[in-house]
Length: 197
Figure 1 (cartoon, one colour):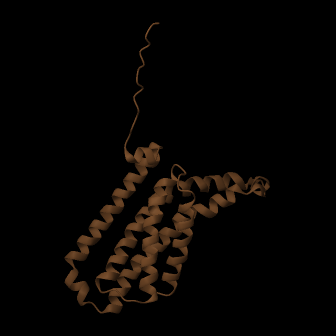
Figure 2 (cartoon, rainbow, N blue to C red):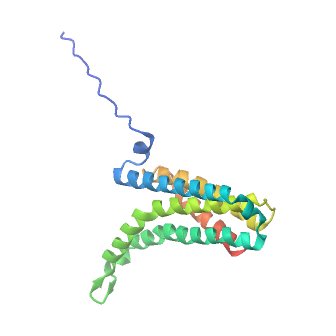
Figure 3 (cartoon, helix red, strand yellow):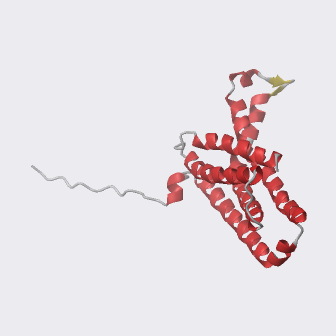
């Protein structure tokens, strides 16, 4: 009997991100905007640190207006990121194939919008999360208050952290729809927080 040599096939390990986000374009976009979000946070913290005395001596109403503006900006960003869900829901509807506006087919239009919201969902979400971090930091450095506004805000930030972790798993569809469930929970919490702030 002739011995057969078994050659071991090299296993391609790759980095953590390449395993979680297989598409290189998606991965580059994620890394770029994660880096930009971290720069935004770092710059904001440096600005806060440099102007700490001025910020602490401000009238609280004026100070609150400053961090509320950051919250409003992040709210716009999160609505843009959340647009992915209704757009893809519409795209899945069977009736969409037959819908027309005059001579224009609606489905190709919705598909174009879906490509845009899919591409910018993660970048806008990451930048908005960075702004929320600064908003939360500014709110907390003047003292935590046990009231609905602070508790709902903290709850929204905690859910947002889990939402971002599940978002990484969403690239390979291994999140068991937790990204969507957490997105709904986050939407409810941040809308309650924004409404009663």
